[in-house]
Length: 102
Image 1 (spheres, helix red, strand yellow):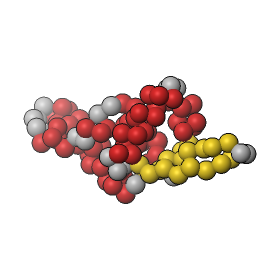
Image 2: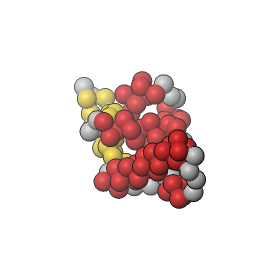
Image 3: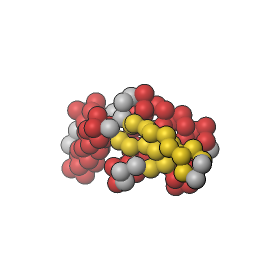
């Protein structure tokens, strides 16, 4: 199945897919906001964000808000393209399942 080969392994983990989808809807999201929304531990969230960053799908910036460090994440153009291809492949698989095609 061609669509299966088009799936991006970086988005096969549900947390990484959720991170990417959230970032497509919002320009930037802070680590704390991700943690609250996804209800993950610091370690688990950090590992998933780092994996997407290492793939070139996320960029980050560090800032201070009321003297506290805040890390902000945003999708890169590469990440946006990869997510669009991944979602397109998923849609193709779903369409094929509905028609019985392989």
